[in-house]
Image 1 (cartoon, rainbow, N blue to C red):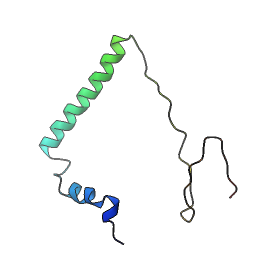
Image 2 (image 1 turned 180 degrees about the vertical axis):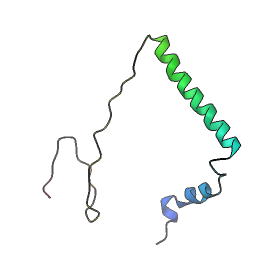
Image 3 (image 1 turned 135 degrees about the horizontal axis):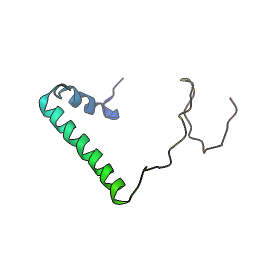
Amino acid sequence: MELSGFGQELFHEAEKAPPLTDPVYLRHRRTATELARRSIDDVLAAHHLDVITAPTNGPAGCRAATRAAHALPRGAATRT
């Protein structure tokens, strides 16, 4: 099966990336983690917050591999 129409080139490019033990990658990851934590901590402190909450989607449903996946609104059901 030809996969070129499905974004397969992204996986080929990823295979060329340095290993996860690469010092440059580790430095960038450490910096990104520190910035993310600091930005959240700064917002919590600036607004005197204890937590940040947000709505999420419900849990993923199970689907048979032989059936097409159809999105249904929450609370909807279909016959099996």
